[in-house]
Length: 344
Image 1 (tube, helix red, strand yellow):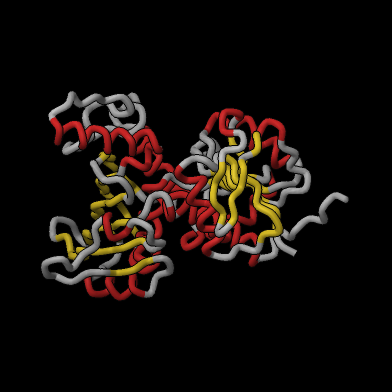
Image 2: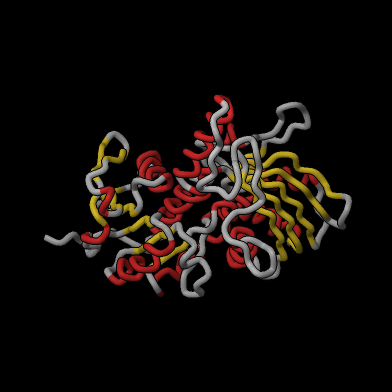
């Protein structure tokens, strides 16, 4: 018997990706239900070779549903995830709403899969921020070997992280530049076409943005609370895949060659690191792929036991949809959930 799975926010970038990945990975489903807001009622979305018509979240009964993949934003998740969990359906939430709740596991399966065991407190498991997910996949094996003290990371985040409207804005602005039309900024605070914007999410009192704070807080919760991390998050004119420039200071010695060998054996990581033209991965090549790619591994001589590297991953996949489905696979493989008997 397969699992009954509901995807909330099925018409969005991540929701559609969730449906694609469920089909690609042949997750054992008895039924998949696409859910969205009232304005998306009967909108068609693809699931493998099938077409699903969206139902309305407000009217849906989760009492016979096993897994809910939630990708509808924090306010929707705040209202609905506890209700869904109370009906015995485990919610895997892609928003930031539950990430910092001590009773909700925050999970990246390659890093802290054991944390899923705590999901029954609220029947909710949180997906991390897209930029955090790829970072901790890269840091975990290095931390196990040499113990990380401090991380300095600058992100180069694609517009898809801000949704379909952001992708449309990049396309429209790029076209406007070429045909000499006025360039309008609606989704972003400044023009994004042929530009970079050092501002993602809202500003906080200390001068960091919420996006940067998320990376700090989530890395501590997922990997190790002792790690110190500072981040600068930047939006770049790329449609899909986030890139990160990472500097790490360790407690113990580690060479670039050792790091390269460790990362080559790490789950979810692919090392493409040739010191020659083109011997590295760019977001264009990572789009549509599942791996977290590591390139440009080198020793940082400015600190004791320091390394620098370049990290790229598809933010819609590993940063969101894929990670959520990997969490569901952990629950299934460890028999923490089994398909419920369906109501007659």
